Image (cartoon, rainbow, N blue to C red; front, side):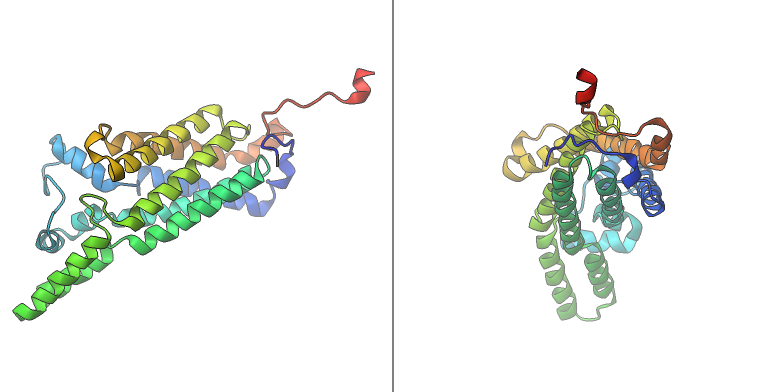
Length: 275
């Protein structure tokens, strides 16, 4: 299927789709402003430069460190365990759904691939995040009355951190979810470049956001010694991309009055006009 199909707005601007676009716009703006991805990295960056003066200067490295942090400052502990990434990924799922409906006529096959990869990545992340598991184990450890019980909860905590070690991103599920969602974002951003629904700038910002994020985790997985760009660089572009998406989805119904076609491909002249 060609990515530059000629289409009209009528197919995407019915009442149900307009409600979906509004919901997707709200999700994008909330994901950008409130529940941003990798808030743990943002906190550590701000803590390192002294803007924030509370909490650890590095993520906990042992089970006991995590248990202690979760008991002393539950919200901070859950933030460093990427609890809010769960909310972010739920919002991203709604964003991807709205973008699929908005862009599928520009390239239905590529958008179907992107949506499938994105939703699989979101499900994988939900299954891999261990924030609630660590909180439960921390509470049980604090309530334990014998050394044997405490040892059992420490062992369970160590097993949990093996699945998702927040300090070094060792969890295979976390890597896979970032990979799938970032690839989905790259595909969507590329389709944006071929559609007049979104600006060319939105497409390029999306490519930078998802490309930098994908590159960071690939390098971190296979050659951590050569990582030189902080994850927060990708986060800045991702924030901008979400804002651009949110603003456009919120105003997408205005296209009815401004254009009857949202592919950037130039239309061929009618044959009869050439005779």
